[in-house]
Length: 441
Image (cartoon, rainbow, N blue to C red; front, side, top):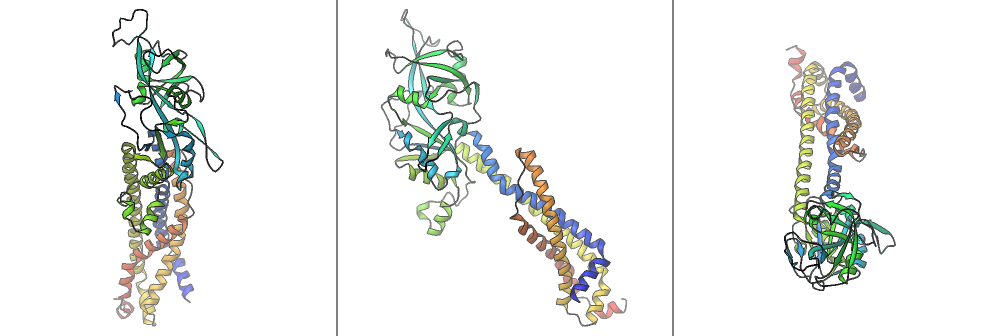
């Protein structure tokens, strides 16, 4: 009898049911699309932000402070501590190794090249003046052996993809170089692509290290004033084979919050496990420091803070849109439910006169709403998945994949919205007195 009453309600009042289902479809479609985007926006935007550069800097803990004047490093080559190139594979063995998108070692070396500096006067006669410059050894694309037997390709192409190159990058193991845009514009004849530059490690050294210019790079930073060479060349030039001074790491992280800034030493075991198993930049830094003892792992705040702020704002906006869509759907359901209760006032009076309890009357209406919620939620999920693909393509360039894990969530939200919208009308129906209704009052 109960099922028959519910079925007859759909047959005799289809218009109200269609309006309720339509409201649920629209609300669940918006909720599905925004939830799908919200689940992907963190990784998508974080990967996009990786083009801004690395967000972690690893240096030897015992290294001395750099001495730079006008962008030129004047530290003696033998001064300071170094890191071992052979240990870099350990980065891909930490707990969050898959979040390490790339890393690039740097070895800064003071160097000199032959040529007249227009800002310096010289009376050396036929002897050309030697101009100081910073020589930076690094990788563009380099295969790093990992202790598990695999290889990982990394370098500037992974950590600094936004750098613009005119010509081509140098190749590993060659006597080639890439010149910063500012330096190349200052001496266009000296550092033209295809030219060979003779480098020395002092103003009086007779040992020449010739390098061929293969490209001119524009980074927008201090790299525009230096000469970039393969790391192996810089190591040979400095007399430090297999070593480097700085390591820039590009890690995929989640936005920092108050919990991530807490001191891990003061956390409870449960809190520590939560912190360790979350890809906070602080937890990844701690794991890198464990893999590389006696190092200082610092966050590059300019990059990390910008990422966290934007990701937090975008995520908050998506959740506000989701809640607004659910609220609008609940109001639409409430309006149609109130109209339905008024239309079926006589039916409710007859059922109560025949002995139906308030619980039975309420259960009939809630069963109808549950069926509408399942239908509206399922259709809304399909429509929302399509909308999410369209938004993903327009915003990120690639469609957002449907998340089947959201289907039970959307169905549950649809049921909550349908029930919430029906509470006030059903409460009013529970107070109907059958006697005045049967008398037509």
